[in-house]
Image (cartoon, rainbow, N blue to C red; front, side):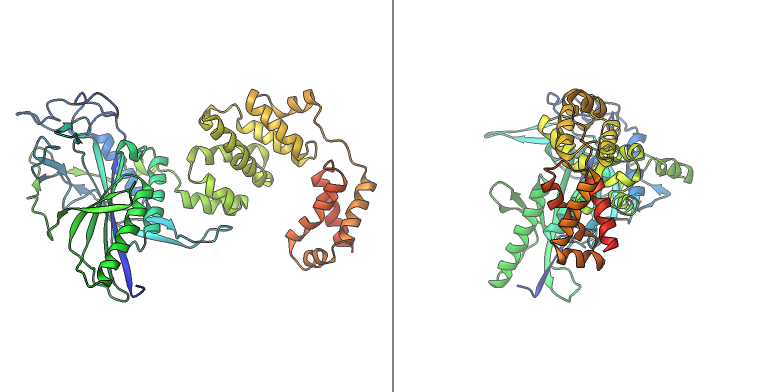
Length: 486
């Protein structure tokens, strides 16, 4: 039904990584015995009063600055009143009409973009980001439901988008981008299995060309980024099918089961909830001055797509390398530290060894990059040996494997194993190059017509006749000289 389009808004909840909870000194964490991370404040015992956690405020201000939000000069705290077992107070401390972060946006790469350069991008506008306390977790058994208050009171920020996403794939790209930014900012680990990142999606369809929003369906229990994408795609298809058959879409909350790919109605949803918000009488408003903002701004990391644009411009890296590096801040920093040692001219060679070889070995060994015995100096020395022709590709891989195993430097491995390349007779090499050029008029014409990559068509035959022992750098230089002369 191409006459309809989807409109999607997301509500993303992120647990902020702090040592203590939002309004008390009791610790935070995951996997502890049930109801051990509690105290009188968490359990809302009579006479207890909340005390604000400034580290949580620092974290949400940092998030807002990273995402281009306006940081409110004054924010206040409100009580959201509802009765449910996960909240012992029967209200949640949150921010209603004066959130700390207003507006902003998240840059995404649109699905289907080109993969050799940065593709088409779009910024998803945010409505707000506000700070609140998390609630407890209900564990449902066959005959009873038990509540665990370990999670209750954990600092939680809610990121609310405008209804501006147009597809399930865009939602996937949004969550991937925002998760990377938050993790790289050190704000949260965003582990969805641990409930550190949770997402609800509001989905509607409308006739193409109209601006009025359709009937909204909220989708809950989307406990992985892939399930968010799949659940939204399922709900769009359900609404389109219902419309095509003459049915009526009702405003409701639905539960999506990622394992079966089906959803079911949880409850009908009225147009508005009456939570009876009112300012919390136990907490004063917070004023955020310019000095506070500047201090936090100085700690903000480079955003992933900004880093990717810089890598394209500074190092002339292909998309296949940058699209791996930029989503992992320690990996990107490892790459840049290596390039400082190896030189910018060898950046692509450095990137290839890190992305293709180092990550493969780290993954196979099931260790973190920081635990690898190969440090930036190892990679820098290896690419220098390759670039100078001292080490050929097959030998370089043998050196790399030994480096990863022992941590020994490349030069020592080359010497101990006798892996240095044998000098090539220059006259013989020049004849091999002449023969290769003479046998491929098409590639010669393309190269001389300005297609630089056409030179690769001549290299294969040269390396073949040399049985892989020719110095690749010398081969390239010789071919270019001969092509320029002919």
